[in-house]
Image (tube, rainbow, N blue to C red; front, side, top):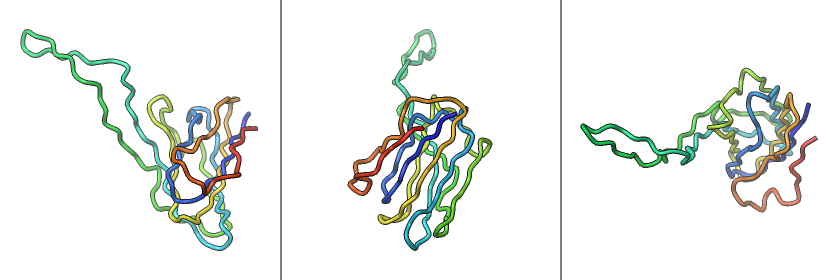
Length: 146
């Protein structure tokens, strides 16, 4: 069993990578702000990979379509308020998604928001959670896997 720990601060979108949903047992989102509630968006994003081109028959000819480049976002929840000093627990059946096609993301409501994320996995994993956007608000805080 493994755990991924991440301290999320600020209102920049963060992609939680290395989190195969079929292995996730639970996700904990703890509001660690000194005094305020936080509104949280948790979502999955489909980003197509240009692995193949699709050939479509057009009369007697075959035409090759360009790679699908449409990215889409689906919210598990949007603008969910987590009160000060409260932890939200999500279980396996709440967060299932295809990690081969989708990535898990989180966004907080305010620049001074702070949430600690703990992801419990059934299997050992080697990847860390990485911050998608560059922000100095998370400087000095570690991404850890135990």
